[in-house]
Length: 397
Image (cartoon, rainbow, N blue to C red):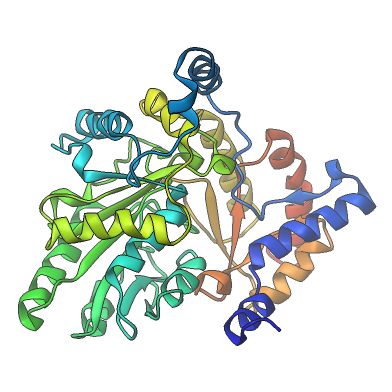
């Protein structure tokens, strides 16, 4: 008999994964080319050739025992130094290898840092809409996730509601920038205001409140938009990153945490993260892909491809009368359902072989998410189906 907590998780299994499985079912009936699956953020763009070349070279020329053996729980020292140097070049920071801990993707990194920070009953605040797994990650360690209601006009952070939600039990705040599911990038002004509030509340309560910035889409931005480096604005910032999206490596599960020297109790937090990497069963991030990522950390995927998909889809959907949030980053488009119950709308879309994810999976009912990290053919060929769906709801006269 499985645990009661796992029963609940299984019953409420990921809506995104469930929709992906529904896509497989529909494809078996109608043919894959006739099903337009926008459910899963699985990059369609191939990883840069440099990644493959790096892996081959590592296997051919580096010491086999070293490549396949254990290393420090934080990861290879030289890999961590290369990543710190890359960040310093890009962001004007001054990190060293002592600030970098290699993790099993961004999800592994978030679980590691939450394991270090949370006591049972501690509160973690995030902002709706948010990546739904945050709830499970916080629950894993006895924490309580509180979601700030969304700003439905601009989808920037709702800071007025946020400030009222902070209590002496608030241990951490999670933001996702660029955001999944909206594709919005939180501006520098927004980040400065967030930092001001958190600094005031730390002083008021005499506590440390850690800002965890989840940034797997940091490199995927459009129209010259820049993602602020949060460690420049708030000392108690921890950054979680993954190469899953920037290098199209989701299955290789490689990422890192940035734990700055400016952090309250830096040494305890870093040492705790190393121990958490071990006791959570990761032990260390995968060795070969660590070394490959270090060689390729200045590479990035074909942003132009995603940008073209974004323009085609956003342009067509708004022409058809749908109300959409224009993405500034990532590869997601957030669209308002033409009816209040977006679950009903998703079911109607399935009749046109369109697979969308309901907004309540992200704490934002009334909206749906489209992942446009799909083939160009899928985007273009889906447009007649979207037009027919718009006509069904009277959006096209």
